[in-house]
Length: 260
Image 1: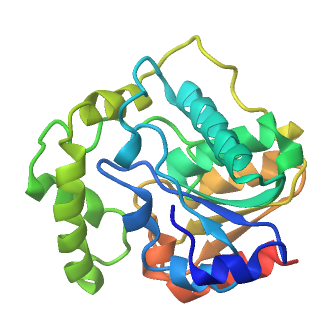
Image 2: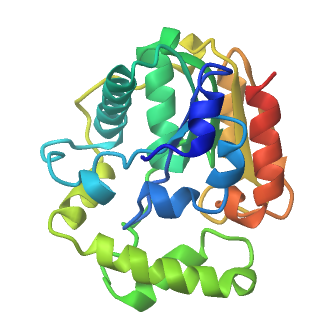
Image 3: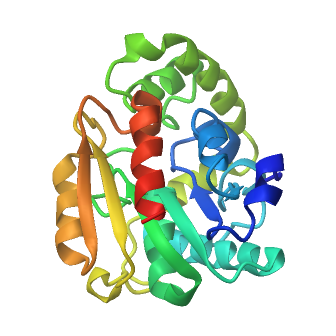
């Protein structure tokens, strides 16, 4: 979560931007945002932490179970980061079932700390997956297939997907990673209450890929319908990874919305 030269220049000009990565096996912040962070950093001071259960934050996440508990724990993790950096108010970009769900939980938990938020791919508000990705067959081939579902057209991103499969396979096989990942999708009836979207009053932009093979755009539409101040942008030709399939459009939409 290192600062760039732009961070110092931009600090204080507009609220910093916290980038919350997605929830696929083996993900971390650096690999998730590599394609778009340089451009976003030219407009905002960007912080991109590894979320609990992933990357450098696998240790210390034992005992959290179920998507609501993970979202709440990650929201509190982000609040701790804001306090350590002396940040009173930030914007958020939350990717999918990890970062998006954490963003919604943070908007509910501490609305005074958030300016605006962008959430992607339904923000974890769709149904739980029928099967846990990758870990039933923890091989490079399985990882590559898992990542392939996140883009609209695998052939366009062959080199990137091969590179990410190597990185994410190593991270997904770290001690504790599988247990943490499986617990994120555990169907539990207790734990924290679900976030009530009708109580989230901050402006929210929901982005969804037209060709998303993980979660259909209707999931984001239902979320937007429930939020008091939100709109949906369906990005033509993009899959679940909008920031990979359409990086220029993604950065423009994010920048325009957060700067409004």
